[in-house]
Image (cartoon, rainbow, N blue to C red):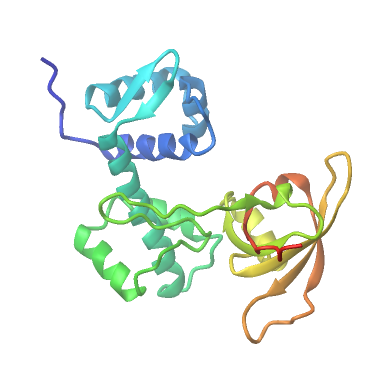
Length: 237
């Protein structure tokens, strides 16, 4: 009978998070896809996938690829919870900007204690989302599901609130800040250029002191695919 080892290393946890994140956008996760995500060789990814299978954190098959078990999913979400709480803490308490926190949180996420994590959560008033709009999982692995739509998929006349930025690349985040394309701002699509062209949108600050007129921005297709919006309900015709 196979017995599962309860010991899991920091590196194994990083792989579990990578598999979880890939599962949000891929129907099937292959070794090569995982290797690309982790920036390692296919041999290294295959070796780790084998190890995670032996510990009961993933299952693998030719048909379905690499998948998390319930145990693996819980471990991944617990690390994601710590990472996202750290991002909030680094901004609200330490004064970092949202383009700096990912790298800092990755350095700290394996080092802090469970008590430190709990105190961060209380100090930051139990945040539900990280600065980039990703939901903060609960301690028992529950995570908020939101019906969001990519800005690239919106048609002229549709509008909503920007809720999530999927790409955490630091230069991109700085650019989005300059464009006011950050979670909490409202966007309305004015036009979409043909042949995979850019979206022309009006960006408004939804806070009471914001400019109700907004600013018109031109957003390229690849960037628009990284921005997720909570649609405003359209009035019935």
